[in-house]
Length: 365
Image (cartoon, rainbow, N blue to C red; front, side, top):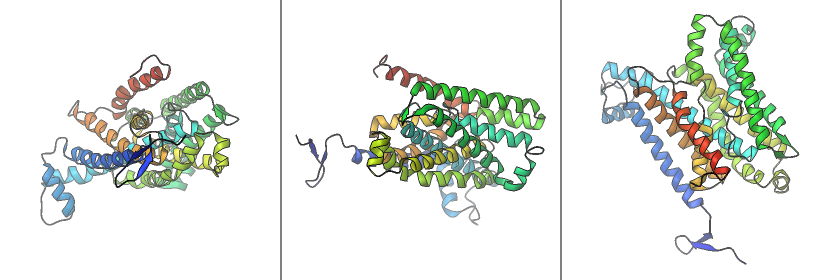
């Protein structure tokens, strides 16, 4: 029996159930939505700058002789909000893509760097540098200089990801229960060491750690972007090339090998991508959870499980959602600022419970 086909423009046909055309359209719409969200984030807040004046300033450049913005608004836009928005978009994209890659690698929609302990490992690496950078880890700081924090977070995320994969996977099959339990154990272990380091921290380090562990973009600047940006950008550039391999892995490792995928090398590359993206993101923003589980799951409901489209769509939607969460955190308790990790957890945790209930057939929505 031949598969049913659907007509698509000028007599062309495509298999019934093929969502590639829809996926391309969704990616275009998500790109436009991201641009609109970034512009909204630039103008939302205490500044009186209008949308038109901000667009004019962006087009003319910060050093233009035509002063479209006042000095105060210009400082707010160029030195505070613009690096925060660009870095926030990069972090949102990296967390969402990391979640999509992990879910494809483990063949489980519940996998997420924050839930299975990978973010906690990155946090442990970052906190170790913050607290011990002047003593035990002084040689590490001297070696990597400005890149010490993202490198330490990358190492922590990589180690925890390798441990998780080794524990949860046997004979090419990943146990869902083992993965979640191992993630809980790894997260608890990391938090125990973070608690010990927090106890050893001085007053200045404590203030940094308290706000950092809740997740925040408040300290974003061009220097942080220069240190974490290369790791995130490299991971995001590599991730689209993982789409075909993740699609093949959905059939099982044996089938993927028969399709020409070098499975072991592919898994190593995927794990490094997740570790780099998660580690660099956690290093500059702290713990921001649930982006990696919410975004890919929402997109699968719309465009399907094809990772060739799921990965770029996740990057765009993850960036937009994190910027919206940041805008909420800046305005909901103004003039104070709510840590963004609280906002994402307040929305993401109920969504995660809904996924669990839906998988068990308790709800059908």
